[in-house]
Image (tube, rainbow, N blue to C red):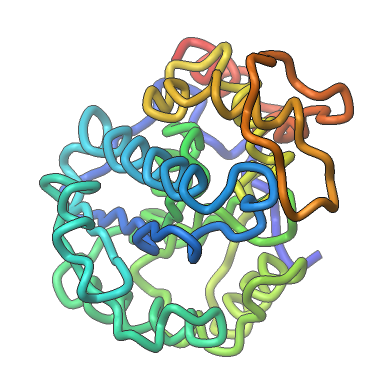
Length: 292
């Protein structure tokens, strides 16, 4: 095993809020019709997909703008660089940091993250947490406990169900080289990132429980199922009736879909893929998550 799990070592009491020296970085590819989340187009079409990506991003920035995250430095690292106005609208009150144009490609993602990490570290000496904008209902407690782990000198990572990761918390001793050579956009991304951290001399722990990012049509269905009992993502939830109607008539493998009808049910094949129970050994954390 390249890593340990955060389980019994996670805080047993209330979650510790982020501190003034910490930084929370949300990486945003500004949604654009025909370019955002293209694997969703066969069901929702490019324009509805853009609306969904925009709603997920706005919900993400809103959720991490206050409460336990209010004291941290909050940064929106966005691309393309000429979409500052839209990034500002999606992330009001957040520090805006444009990427270079080359960083839209997955092959250059490591360079983008490394450059942003260097910039952040010049002013922030606490934990630095990287998130995407496509896991909009990621529990805030995941971020808080991962950040607490990083403040103690150990990196923390939360795996995505597809083998990537949705959260990375870096301690002050992590060098910029932790992003070099990572295999991006594949089923080995999380493993590759852990291995790179280890090679750089940074200890790493993994959250005991993976979370879903939204890349596939079935991920959207799973998200809508979770939001039936969650307080997160009001903008996504407002789109639920139309999205569920589209899901009900979607036929996998067909490029063109009929317009949504009055059908409100969900297709029987679309079984939700629920994230694994987070930190199953930690009853205190489970109680905190259920109370939110």
